[in-house]
Length: 387
Image 1 (cartoon, rainbow, N blue to C red):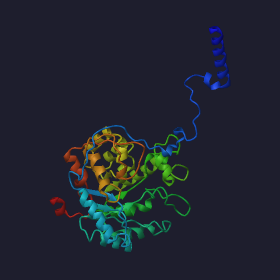
Image 2: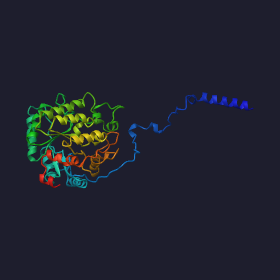
Image 3: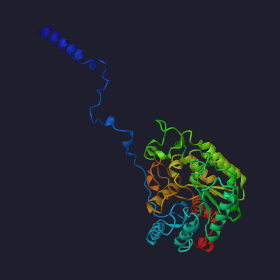
Image 4: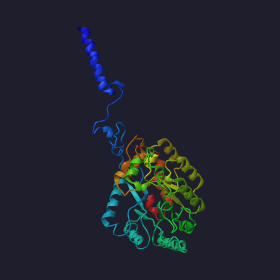
């Protein structure tokens, strides 16, 4: 009877396996996911929460008064209402920010209105930079016209000149050719900035991932899917290295002009190259705005860089004055906190977290305000020394 029961059990097992082939293929084979299974989740919906427990240092104010050399506050009286400006000042005061550079001055009536709303109404709290007008770049007199316009902007109170990344990426002649950063038509404009001791804030290029295919290897996949117009890969755009080479040719050609190369020279992923530039061009500076996401994921290299080039780096945020944003920058610069989220400093940039670089006080003081005081035009020296 026992033998018969064993035979029946074996026969039943063979029947089950033959009816379900997957059962005979090894225990490591999982059944296909059921509808609604977490394995069907899209990558864009994945928002991992770190389980690491570490120090969290809350800094309300910087160790030294800060000058934000890179911000966009808007321009013209319709944008810069008294309430909006008061809000900026309130956030700056709460976060210990002494001065903000506004890069949205424009030219003509907009510039005059912007200067009245900011620089003239609140001396030493705001410094406004002008822009040039790229309309009509095919005209034979465009360079002379824009140089005269720029000098008039300086005369009425503009403290510097801003160039957007559109130069080298999207501004084109009528025949479709891109206007390069080192176009000779711009030489009189660079020279005018040197002559009038106004610095140039220039944004050339963008994060390296923005110039690579949007595929499984792109480290900014999430961000670029949210903003597909930020992808500059393809035949319509030059490679990032070419845009940066154009910029360096300009910096080399105009040694009397001070260039603040925004976003850490738009090359924060390659600090060795940025170091070579700073070694070669004493008229070049960089700011940290919107790049602590890159700098903070390489804290050892970044800290060594900041110590070596402490006289050439300036504080900036590229984010409308907001105390929480400023404080993320302070945490990066001043603490040794590990693996923290910096999205509030600007927005989500890359799928990683950052580390603080705990700079010494003498270096912090230079980055927060002393370097800016050497470079910027229009700061009240007595006010700077009293703070």
